[in-house]
Length: 230
Image (cartoon, rainbow, N blue to C red; front, top):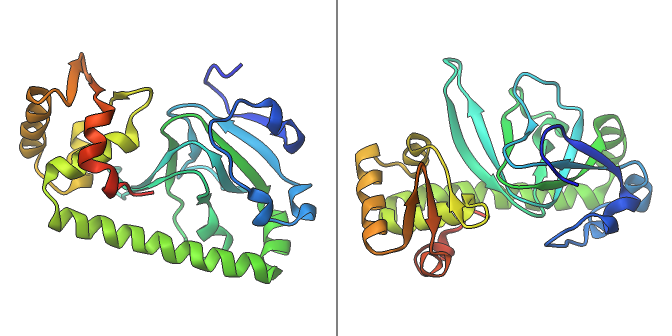
């Protein structure tokens, strides 16, 4: 049913018919009236949920899956900022009118999103005190995660942070990320990253398969699970 390519749309009533691996009680976040106007958007691995050069028309709530947020610089270079997981919002800063430049958001694996048209969200959610309290706490936690990421870069050896990064980006036990992007996100040189990867191979934490790496999930969790960004 899910073969990649273009985003797929469903009605909320179709949720039970979609194969899911995680569940979240989204009805505690939104009123039934608002949910009646929502749709389900499904994105496959590497699909873009939001793009810099496209108008953002929906507020997304991630019901399942993982994604990455990228900032696009004026010179065309992009920087990985943060990871998203189940229970995260996409587009909340645009909804609150505090972000001028939209960021790219790319799916790591299949992402199932609850999608609210901005015309609906702006007129109803911004007058909903329950939602505003909830989004305030959410944004606070998001800031703390970014602060913690930079703190971890200064206080933990690369092997711990690389293990966590691999666990956050793996799909079906395979790690396939651009090493230059990984090095930048982890705040190390490319040389240091490759040295640590070679150590991982020597210690049988990973097995190189072409340009990808097969992960020893159990052993990597012992190193990096406490440093996950979501």
